[in-house]
Length: 374
Image (cartoon, rainbow, N blue to C red; front, side, top):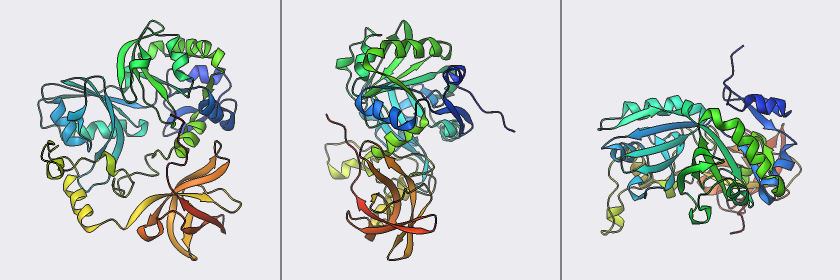
């Protein structure tokens, strides 16, 4: 039996009665009071997640930007200090190594948040292509990460910090303190709601977890597990590595063309060209010839729940597969994302999902399924 990795809050989760599961080699809470209750808490109020399993990679040095630019698809040169962007690492053939968040700490320091199961792979990938005057550090063991998400999340965090949260825009961050603990406070998240992701030293995680729950009591904050994290991100149509994106899928196919910055100079001479990056040539070629498949949203019309990996049928012919599927508690529907041939991707296309050998009616719909009130 393999030994599971544990976050600094593992004992807290178990003492709180959380249901624990093996998640990519980590012993993680999947639910506390229940997925539906936790999901609704985040949509209506506030929820607290332990996401300390996520990985962190630091890139420092005179050519830190050049290295980040070469290994990622977005344009990190556009970042101002204290700003973050969603991006991706690609292989030369254009498939995903991982999707990541890039934070600009200073001109010569970039902080990358990567998926838990990919941390070592991502680090080795970046290090293998480090032909620049930059240092790369696999820093995951130096951080714990807590996520406070929901429309009332700012009210919770504001009770514990002197940072001017109102001035921090979406996808920006500040280095400060939360409840006296040194912290990186980022207005980012994976739920489709407003909220905060807080990076701290692992030995401070338990105290801060408890103090956030105490501060959030008046907002009916709930501790939340990975089950609600999954239903929340699915409603918001946020991709999950190994499902919507992997080494065999490109950003064009995943509907993530908005994060890919090719030769912007050709589009507008006033704009600067990002330059070469890993996977660029393959993406240019695929864009020129056109994609044949694309990630598409659907909702179930018949009785049944689409699960990851189920076959998608069109006129009785196997045409694709479900990448993620399940109930959408905020919408009171069963939804999913799937990979389909391009001619079936228009909203309103009739499909069937093979649910345990039974064909259940479905229809393609625009994504995201859920958008929060601004």
